[in-house]
Length: 327
Image 1 (cartoon, helix red, strand yellow):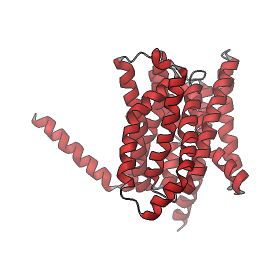
Image 2 (cartoon, one colour; image 1 turned 30 degrees about the horizontal axis):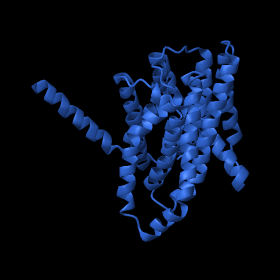
Image 3 (cartoon, rainbow, N blue to C red; image 1 turned 45 degrees about the horizontal axis):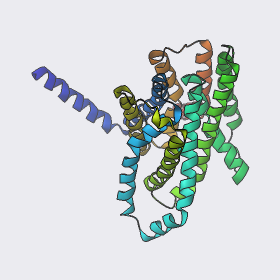
Image 4 (cartoon, rainbow, N blue to C red; image 1 turned 90 degrees about the vertical axis):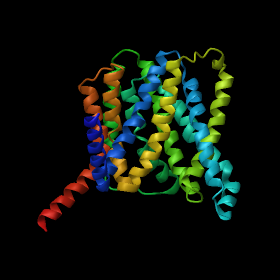
């Protein structure tokens, strides 16, 4: 008992020391959030093995997380200024539309892709949404591409094509193409959400916008769920309920708050770089938990995608280090 208490005290001391180093602690939080987000595809694959379809997975997840966001929305709404309240009343339908695109369509396409392709390929394709954000901003708002963006695009899509060619060689050509199309659709829908949510978030608290958007998406999910009629056949075993709860809390709610804290500690750019390791976390869990294969195609494709996201940071780090050495 004494030894156990001593170990607990040592752990608390170590945690306090870690918290005192904001940069290291922020990196740790970003890694944890990335791993939790990456776990989603793995849990969905397991739920599919239990006979649960895509829309049922979405409905079960929404069932657990919607009350949380409603509570948060109500708490924030009571503290809004009159100007913010007026903005919500004027733009609530835009928030709903953006939420339907970002939470309903994006999630549905993402889950559909997992019926046809591996969690590793789905994770890689989904990670390309920043490139779609750049294209949308260029197409609609005439924003210029940043220096080196074409190299980033080339590296990213080279990695995806490499892994895609591997899965195409396995035989189910149409299934892989369908799954990849769904994954690209998910990435594009989420990119639209990222672009069009900026203006709304600038006029109200981000949590308030999220609550409205999630509420609208939830209505679409439940309508789709009831229209499909799968609620008549769904088997709510203890394992399915536990997986749904984990998917809702551990893979949706928890990482959203952890990520916000990480951004507070180290900034959005650093967090985005750590997010580049999402495909790595997905690959490790897919191999360990789902027994998916991991060949040199997987390694090379994953390395190219991770490098595409992290190379600007690495270049800046090298330049800074060289300048420090010269000084």
